[in-house]
Image 1 (tube, one colour):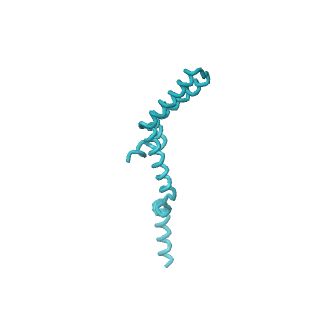
Image 2: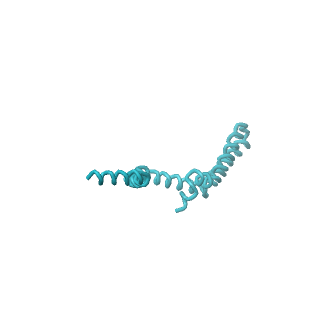
Image 3: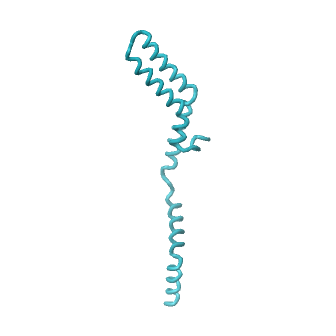
Length: 112
């Protein structure tokens, strides 16, 4: 009996790295990521907002803001230059929404 125990001990000592690796694989599969479902839903929401802003809605919003800024400038409001500059910066961000979303979420997150 003692001989068998020593053989098992030698075998375990010889293959301890393999046994630890198998244990870690089994342990990681037992503990699935609990945030996988909610994070996928959040990613879907971000993708749908990004698609809406990068499309015609975003372009119409940028044109509307520029129109309001220039209308204010025409009627003599000097403070409307801030609105025009903000509309230009916002329009640039709206046009870059798809690229920004792909870089934040990963290039393949919004492909489906």
